[in-house]
Image (cartoon, rainbow, N blue to C red; front, side, top):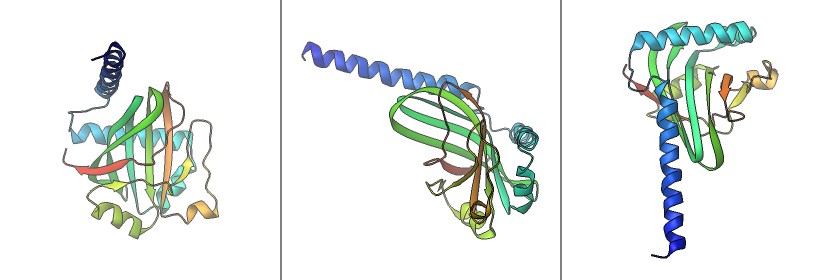
Length: 191
């Protein structure tokens, strides 16, 4: 093996190890391995309190929604390859009906880590039903954002309010800019 290809493999091994280390380190504060329903419920309540306090207009969305998926803490890390993980709960009429995990993987020009919360508002019974029936629901590019980052306010106009699923992403902290839910997969878990 040439010295140049050996150097490439060493750098590649380092990069893969760094990504794995970032993911594991970031996940340590994210409740991985902690399936305790009471802790998830407490985090969900705190997240909703924060969202309602910082973005009061989200209360109106919550009242109109058929259901809400609340993901209190999603940890995302990447160095060329990246991923995200979090746990949360699906609420219908304010009560938890199911628990979910979220995962996301991607590749490309990226470096850093961040944590954020998000809430999906299922605005129609059909959208909620499709989500609950799926074995693994993935957020698409057509998802409408009512809050996309710390600097934005609730953007709810007549076009947004007719969308079947709305997203609020907030509480971002870390070294990466922006958070998008495109490609994020949600799966039901048993806590």
